[in-house]
Image 1 (tube, rainbow, N blue to C red):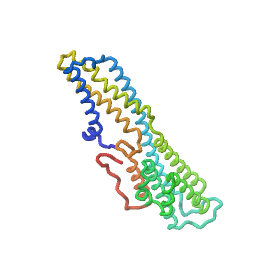
Image 2: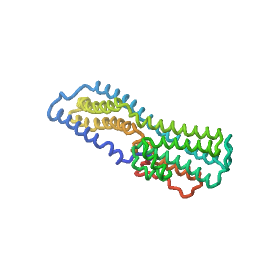
Image 3: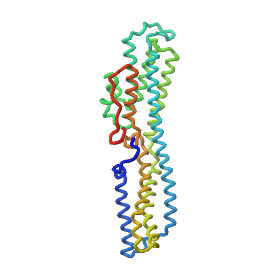
Image 4: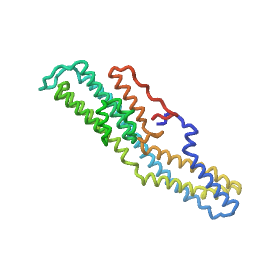
Length: 322
């Protein structure tokens, strides 16, 4: 996610230079044919070009709204992951205590050492789930050993790594631990067990929302025709402008170049903005900063466990937060 208030010129140039070169050379070619070669047949009436421009502006505006909706839904889903992760840690620490209060269960009270292990397992597995979901959405499962394994037992990590959908199986393992805490150890009563299972249900819903965006591409008919219409308009624009500028005098024909390039660049930039926002989980400059969000969750949850040696928050790289 680009976090600087204003775009740097090098960023603008990165996305614009190819279009600017094409638009400039094309407009120059039209002017040369019209002014120097005398091929006046390249000129067309301005009215249909203007009408096309209005239609294209509505179309790409509609497309960009859809693209932004996908990004914003993705950001809201990850905001929910942050909130429910904190809730999960609070529930694990405050519900799972030394008191055995599950009805029908007779078991010894939990020792401090046992509670420490159980708290750490529930909280660390949640951190692992967040990172596993991030890697799954970005198709970066090769980073499992570095990003997820440190938060799991080695055997559990090896087993989860082999799964087709590791985040889903991590949630299932959380549910299995809750069952043990309720039925075997008696450290959760029915109310607490239901509340924590509700949190797992929310994590499933949030994961499913992210997977829906990831696995459902932006409708290609909108994306493809948006590109086609913008370039069609850019191709017709100098043909319609050249006769209009000729009315001001023969030498004013050359003004077709800067003005057609400017208008074409504006339309093309609007189209690019929508295109780069279509898929919010691709680890690009305009995407949801899932790595930074996962680090925030890790810091918050480990601090709730009482840990003091915490990793720093991630800083932007070239104004981009990943």
